[in-house]
Image (cartoon, rainbow, N blue to C red; front, side):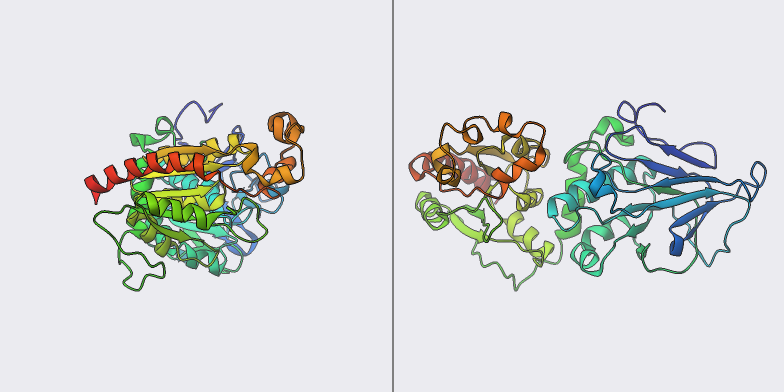
Length: 405
């Protein structure tokens, strides 16, 4: 297989190690026959007494995280070894289900990357390599807080306990294993590359399965459903993170005057995913400034309305991350691109400065210069201009509410 971009992934026929390293985003290796895992040394063994000797085993190594192009990030990902040898450890626990191995390290902890580099590629891998099979998840950097935060979604992939490559000492046996997870592109699932044409709609259904049960009667986000006023969730940013909406209270007041029931949602690393899902899935519209918290768009119902406020210089990232995500989940997407006068960058740079006038030319290929736009910039919306967007959003949200409740 020369290219993983032009065809779907299938299991190799030979019961040996098969590695694919041609994709720009990831490497992965597969053992299609029985294999033994020693977590203490992050190594999978497959026996091959006919062709190998103990002195000359076949050895492959892979870092199971789909950001292959980012050398700094990948250097922090634990390497997993696959060895084909006539000598293997004795099995202590036998699994009948195959294993998928990946890392929750790298950029994990940022909700965008938790999904883009984690759960979406995991979905693609599970349905590409092991369709309609139970799997066992073998994870490095599966820290307690991360497992706790994402327990519901992890349980949609496996009914088995997670095997932690960082602290487990038992020897496990599997019928087969895939080390590494497959990424198609940013927040993208290409049905042409997956057996049975799985789409983002199927992944969205998996999210609903994970979080759409056991509704919380003591919900921490207070909202009172109304038969006449659609719920608008306003994503809030605070602190020194950049892209803060400086006139948030005024925007909230304008939205309420137009007819919305507005709930301010400021997620933190400690925010329950179940509670976030319940709030956003119950709403009819959502607004937020470009940033990781907009990954919560994945909790919106199809045909609800999402408006992304796009600060100066973030147009490309806004499109490929959250505009794409909104369309993939079936949301009605709106975009408000701020003008220079609405950006705090004018306090530091003149309107004719290259930073303001031509962000693409200013940034060039140096992504680190994006910090000017991501971390140094806050937003004060022009209420007269933004009000017209709110009115259009209200019409769409009201129509959705009348149809779907």
